[in-house]
Length: 252
Image (tube, rainbow, N blue to C red; front, side):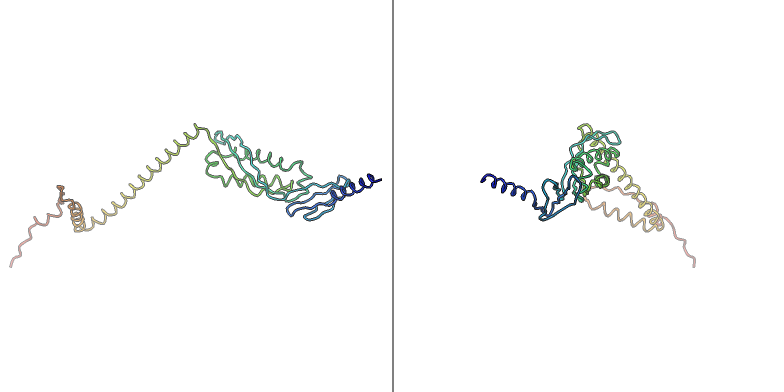
């Protein structure tokens, strides 16, 4: 008789333990009644009737998913290895349990295929310099496709783009050639601007002979600062021409 009542008490304790559940603030319970969806409960203390009701816990906190390294061939036929990280959370516990078998695994597989698909449509330079644009494109596609699973993809970040050694050397040569091209363009632009300024200065000086003479004298002053050098300075004919001109003698 003692063992009978002990068994009854133990059974009652087990039933009560499986009846009352404490759900945290970030948790929800998807309750099924005889296999059919009943309701979503929580947070706080909830009651689940054993045997006829079953409960599945769902965490609503943001999850970080590390996408494994993917082999991607860019649009300009460059093979690279790319990995990324995805931030997502469950916004509808019912859809996350009913519409997909394992939402975490499904999101991981979908992120891998989307990463390869999107990056394969862009060239290598865009992968290296326009990551923000690519992150937004991947995030938008993932968010749209996981919407029926009750999942919200909040952010996608491409972490690394690994290249072969041969490709790194080729990019270095390309960057060096680009810097040389820019240097030549800047030098040519400077020469063009200088020639335009010299042309303007020549036009201004040609309007007055005195201005040209003063400029010669200013140049001579600047050169004569160094007293150890011998200066050979061309003397313009216009400067001494008035000396050879004879003034007509006025008759009384």
